[in-house]
Length: 106
Image (cartoon, rainbow, N blue to C red; front, top):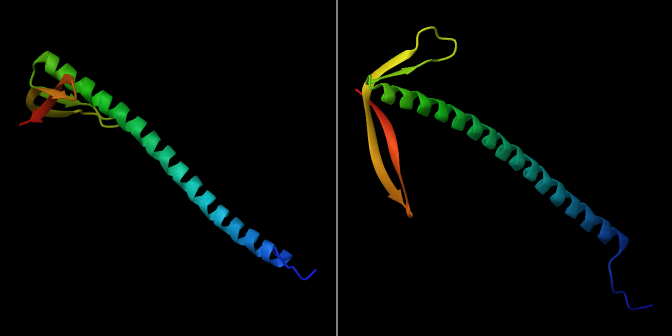
């Protein structure tokens, strides 16, 4: 029994302790990053909905031809009125084409 190949019980326990510390550290980072990704996704959904509402308002203003953009805000009795003009720009990118519509205030 002079051949002492292998690890002692204390060496194995120390290695497992170090491994558990590393695993718990990375798992907490994983949870934080998942929470951040989820929060960013929720913000994107809300911003997309707001952008869609503003685009509908701009489309309605340009369809009426009044040259005035009226934006109602919740909780404010009088809507914001902005004079300006609509500008449409054709674009092409990677084989796709479309039209961008902007409202430029005066």
